[in-house]
Structures are given as C-alpha cells and as structure tokens.
Image 1 (tube, one colour):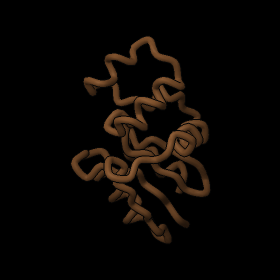
Image 2: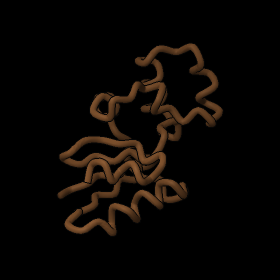
Image 3: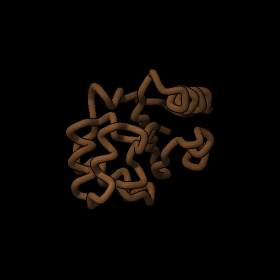
Length: 112
C-alpha cells in the first residue's frame, strides 16, 4: 500500500506519524515536505473533503497568520494556506483507504 504524508520534519507529531508509516508492514511511504512543495488549492480541498474536515479544521490556529482568518470562509482559508503553507495543520496522510490528519499520530492507523 502506498501512503503519502505531507510532512514537516521540524514537527514532533509529523515525525511520530512518519515513524508509524515507516514501521507499518507493506507500506510504501512518499514523504512530501509541504513547506517546500505545498499541495495545490484543489488538492488541499480534496484532501480535506476525503478526511471529512473543513479547511477551518485543517488550519494551524496557533500561527500568526491564522488570527486574521478568524471570520474567514473556507475559500479564504484555502487561499491563505496555499499562499502560506505553514497555516496547514500537519501531518496529512493519504492512503487508498482515506485521508487522516495525524493528530494524534495514531489516527493514521485507521487508514492502513
């Protein structure tokens, strides 16, 4: 099975999630450093839809840029995430069984 993780190597939760994927038998992991190679707006919207999340739920609320989005709609949040990928909560993991936000990291086991 192939798993893609949108990863930030400086994030402990992202590293923990990556370790779960790398230690899962039969899983081929594609690691995307989303700060260097962010998903497109359409790809991000599709990931959230597949995960059952709204863009607001996928927003990294502790970032300075997120405060300006307090009253923004989903389109504005997606636009902001594409413009500044640090606003994307991490890690997002996609497999043929679905998409999960690895918070907590163990949630990715649901799609393995």
